[in-house]
Image (cartoon, rainbow, N blue to C red; front, side):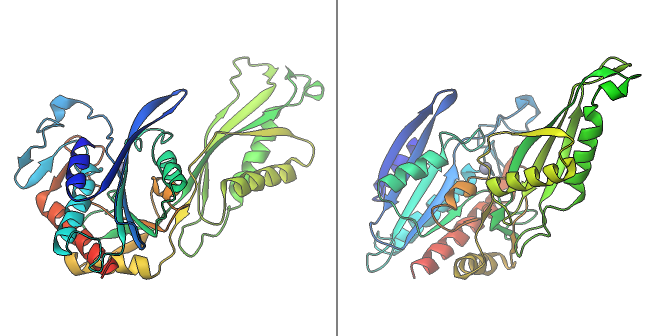
Length: 364
Ligand SMILES: [Zn+2]
């Protein structure tokens, strides 16, 4: 962030660095820089934090050396995603150098960098607070490119235009414990939970949408914890995770589960849901002129027509989508989070050229 501050200040950016805190969470340093005051406003987003390197001795080159070997740059974060940040900064500086130091030739337009240090963690003191801070200052964004490693196998194969949301919960069925020989005096919650699990997982949550595969519910454990052979237990629990698409919101999804369970319980099974707090909502940017602009730039440089994908886990795009349309395009994700995370120098150059084309066309 210090390097970014020095580099972008020299190019005429106004830079803000701030630490956000929250009881029970680690303090996180965040970064915002902008050049220009007018619309259109193109924002580049990313994170400087990385996952731990794992067994450092297992790396071919030390994980924080930045060693270049046979045309590849080694290092934790090379792909996810300091490499992506380096490329967009280089592309922006190239663009400014060619356009008289302003985002656009007639002096209109703005470019900003929204960089957090809290993406690989719980994302509490990062992008959500940074966006709220920016909104309070009156910052308005028109479009965002998040430089996460979006590509599967080769640079240019995938642009992420959406990601599913995630919800964790526990289904709790309460019965009445008793002796297995006298079941009429007890109420076995194992029977109840089997009925409810069956009802919840057998009917699909939806059929999928124009941009997403169908939502999916997976039960991950069923727990009764009964060690006694002749005892009917008093309670049974089942945990689940749902990856959901844009047919639902977190609230509508919870209501759907409650309704389905109530119907199956038919007043005879006592149940409750405990949902874990989630800020992992769904994000989607519908295909249109902006996705086309990015797609064309990728195709021009790489010769590949990228797939507009909505697969994979969550990212900070789930927060940015509330402020402006966002797409994810960055490096190839194959070695991210792995030992020997590395990126071909050729990919860094090509990605810089792609970003440059996007910026030139956007302000052209
Ligand atoms: Zn990342």
